[in-house]
Image 1 (tube, helix red, strand yellow):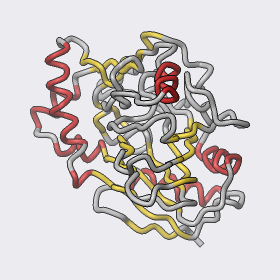
Image 2 (cartoon, rainbow, N blue to C red):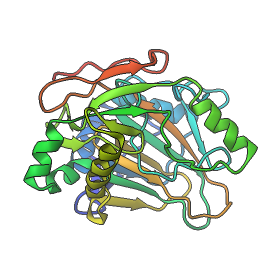
Image 3 (spheres, rainbow, N blue to C red):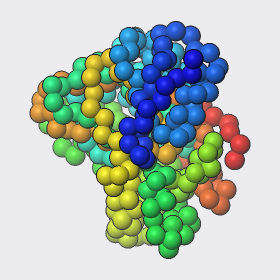
Length: 298
């Protein structure tokens, strides 16, 4: 039987039932899940019994895996799992994963291990809906622009309050990376256009820092409109998969000092392409140790 797909909001998110993630996947199931991701951008599986190896196996249904992170070490005993742990960091900022490399991950998978008794939701925003919401003059302008993304920017963690978090921040920026991406990215599977910005976006090429910041604030406000956002409240044993090419996400720091642990595995992506057909470029750093390049038709 094909998976059962239940929409969570009108613009983003769906719950998937009828798929046993612990079993080997057949091609028709993977195709159905990819179609669900293309349509809903984020899909959720409930009551999942997976370990790290199982999460890696499921993520690999969609392509070659990245390592855990360009700079941050993998979780103990793994190569591909990044611990999203409140003890070391709180990503209390809108972002798209690892956009400071030339080919950011195409998909992100998150698996809940420890969830706080309140708060700690993950917000996911539909960047294609945001692009469609832009007034025509802003769409035309956005189509023509390129943006430099870097891990040296003030992404998340504005003030590390413990030695452990300060060390995590030091490692996060220990090797600098910069990549230049189109501000509007064309999705290689659907052809949709989406705003490709977020917390790692430092400046718009050709604009001053102040003009860049002002325009990025305006565009970002369309991404985070409530109607474009799924607010997912975690329970233990869930898996959330979202299309990193056309979404942003935000881990909400509203759970005091309660422990929160999600494990992340990401799938290697293609080099973004803009409306004009121009591809992204790496400006600083070499991330070939982190990810291969997914080859897709432009």
